[in-house]
Amino acid sequence: MTYTEEVMAKLKSQYSYEPEFLQAVQEVLGSLSPVLEKNEKYRKNRILERLTEPERTIGFRVDWVDDAGNIQVNRGWRVQFNSAIGPYKGGLRLHPSVNLGVLKFLGFEQIFKNSLTGLAIGGAKGGSDFDPKGKSDMEIMRFCQSFMNELFRYIGATIDVPAGDIGVGGREIGYLYGRWKKLTRSYEGVLTGKNILFGGSLARTEATGYGVVYFAQAMLADRKENLAGKTCVVSGAGNVAIYCCQKLRQIGALPVTVTDSRGMIVDPDGINVEVLQKVKEVERASLARYAELVPGAKYTPASAYAEGRHPVWDVPCFAAFPCATQNELNLADAQALIKNGCKCVAEGANMPSTLEAVHDFVSSGIAYGPAKAANAGGVATSQLEMAQNAEMQSWTFEEVDKKLKQIMDNIYKNAADTAREFGRPGNLVMGANIAGFRKVADAMIAQGI
Ligand code: NDP
Ligand code: 2IT
Image (cartoon, rainbow, N blue to C red; front, side, top):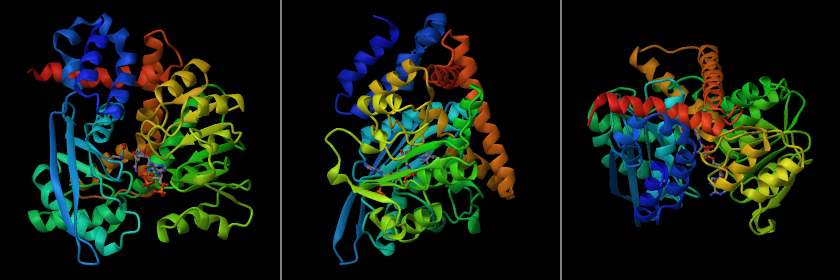
């Protein structure tokens, strides 16, 4: 048995009930053989065993009172996965599908993503099985306050800096920050994605979506291609999807779809980003509302989808941007995209493609940007927010956006160069995994046991 097979077999028996975590580990370990074979030190130092076990996992009860006066009880966690290269950093997710295994997959991915940014940030993730859908502002506030009543003990501007993810945006970060400040009597950059009024960074809201497009542009430029005038398919309709669509429109590409948990929009004239923002950011409504406001757009409810397929991947396109959630794109979807002429896939969501779909993209030779490289612009800009807070300055939108673009170009170059170094040019899955791994593993070895 090879070292990776040995570690994978042990994890499968230990954590058979955490399928998403096992999937994320499998994807990384499947790429590392070339670097592990060349360097006995990683096995000797038990790096894979250490990397796949979080340094610390905190779990807690979150009880709160709803508008009807009933007591509600949720579960909350923070997984502090790895701090070899910097303070723990990663988002908080609020969604009924959240459990410890999902947060471990996200925290594990975050280690390598954060390493790839070239910045000094370790990997973490947290969240709750709380469902924000249909909750009033006051219910969201009371939940966030109760969540922070426990979390505050474990975080700090140089210890662990949470941010947003699914179900957590500016509103939630504001309520979390307010409670943290009250509990600690301090005013520091302990969360990112804050409102500009109290230490937020310009361009953080846009950063993940813009970064995914910058990454796609970098991949395509290397192939003497570009996105101008090209039809694009986007899934999701949240923070990442909205600003992915906005940047695509700015550069003259045509995003024609968005999706949410209840349905899909196809808008042949190109997604109207202002209307999308009104529906999702202001009204917090379903995408059915977009079709009411934009007469040319077609809405398909999720109830009409065929079993096991998402119809968004059947829409012919040059480039696809999965920006909703994990495992939203399977092998049949990948095959449909490629058959219809798709030449580029850049992942805005975390682990949106199944292992089989990833394999299909890589072996087809299209420009495929895996999540931990392509969506790193969000966390990278979070680190820029930490830097601004630490120096008590704020930079202009243009300054932050320029740094973001530079970081995305560097991530692409690092992943592409590393893939070439290990004899697999163009395989950015291998390039990103090895490049992200080496820095963290070598830092762990240097810091001893
Ligand atoms: P949002 O909560 O803003 O939006 C999520 C979107 O995806 C919504 O449209 C939501 O639909 C849809 N969605 C979520 N879960 C499901 C599901 N189980 N089935 C179908 N649709 C679903 O989150 P973000 O845009 O911030 O996050 C999207 C993805 O990007 C996630 O994978 C996240 O981890 C990743 N990401 C986010 C970053 C950030 O900075 N925010 C950074 C890097 C990655 P509905 O509106 O109906 O709920
Ligand atoms: O998955 C991610 O990278 C995020 N949700 C952003 C994390 C962050 O700390 O900005």
